[in-house]
Image 1 (cartoon, rainbow, N blue to C red):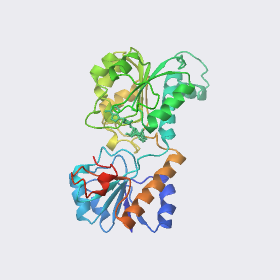
Image 2 (image 1 turned 135 degrees about the vertical axis):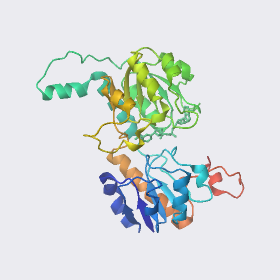
Image 3 (image 1 turned 90 degrees about the horizontal axis):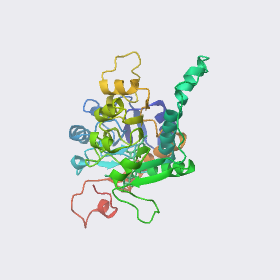
Length: 343
Ligand code: NAI
């Protein structure tokens, strides 16, 4: 079994190299992202392993299929960047549905605490022997309302953390879990009543720009927004306008709408071409990390183990429980449908 591994970073090799060797998978690690220009590198490989900012549109899927690739193994949970419908009948797609939700939930809280207690600014000051406190005043989280959009694995892990801080919780989910004891409210109520809003739902056609100018207008003045989910949940132009109008108190962003050609790469010393990102980063009340919420030892180990077991299951049995598939309608004969993995 040969695997072409795209967008490789040193930490990927650390977790995948030995595991693949132990499972008889010969890996070609490519630093390039997967796109129409690089898809040909997968010729002769049965599978490709791809990450969040690779391109998996119709053209790339066709090129991979022509090169003989049978399986796209996503080493991530999100699959909004994959044309699942176009892949149907040509190539199989598997993903890692869940891995340490604490990695992302804890990063969301790290961003929030950094932002509101200004620890990043204090760190820089004291390194310069500047011990002044002016401009570092924050606020208590205790007693404040945290609004959580999306109460899946990560949303719930984040709720537990917020409970520990003595926060009040308000939650919104399109598919509320009625037996969970979570107090759900309509999205507009959450927007209006929350001091901090944290996004933990997937990016879909429906959630695209769910935080736009209208949603920001409904928020409390000074509300803090956290996004560790997917960039396009927020209309970045509207966020910038909300910050400039002093409506948004602070923004903690691990993801950005136009991140795909920027995040994970070193652009220091270059001119930043994305004006909106450059302006956001220049704001004193915005913290940006480059899609690193998943980057813990535990999460990376989970991701590597599930990805390798997805690949071996697929090539041994022709199917895998973590397969994503387009809803073809052939209900009775389709194993994927029986596993409720159709989209
Ligand atoms: P999950 O599938 O366990 O939970 C997602 C929740 O969102 C579900 O409860 C679902 O009902 C809800 N949802 C679906 N559509 C909705 C809508 N229109 N409005 C409100 N809620 C809706 O997913 P999990 O594991 O909690 O991950 C959440 C998101 O976090 C992922 O979709 C992914 O985009 C992001 N993520 C980010 C990472 C990072 O490194 N920054 C790493 C891993 C995931």
